[in-house]
Length: 255
Image (cartoon, rainbow, N blue to C red; front, top):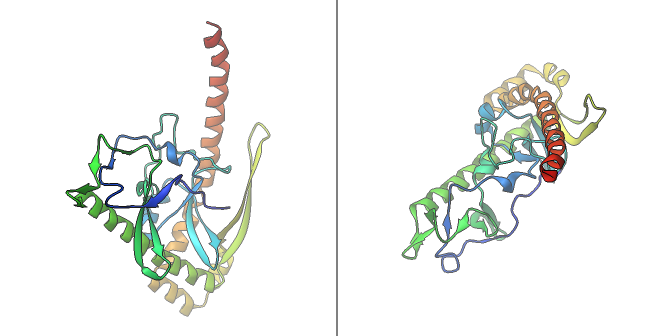
């Protein structure tokens, strides 16, 4: 279950090369149409679990908490035909676009801000300026602060999830979804908290996980899994809408 990228042409932000660049806020979110999942910080979980199932994936030696947006690869069931986000909560991973931080290979604490030059919202006519008179605009400074905070929060969250993994609570899972029309989909390569192992933790381990905040993440994650059924409903609804539109097209063309 790979985390799909939404950046087509990311480059390091440059004061000279991008001095005329502006960011418009009226662009659609088609860039996320193929984004099946996104990393979620612990501070977002209370809102995110109202809309999305949140599970964990393993990347290198880390377990990442992710929100799932679709049942199939490159599917996002929360972007409609007009490019609008239909869920109640928009994850910070999506909100940070078209910006993305890149770490300095020589200094992990040094962050380089990159921008997707292919983004629809990047232009020279309307929206917020990135630079004014050769200096960062207030908009850009706020953006950099947002990127720094999101990285700090996600790094801390990964550390909390590691405590769950170290306690032996994460188990790899495979989910199969069967629709009424006979179609089936598999989600693989993700991990969930094993409730049986969770109930057998020693009082000391339970207290330590509670005190650190890891236990809170575990319970929010478990609560979110009911949203897998919501994804099935959204997928079925989209199939019905697609079939309806396909049935209408020949009549319109013929007319």
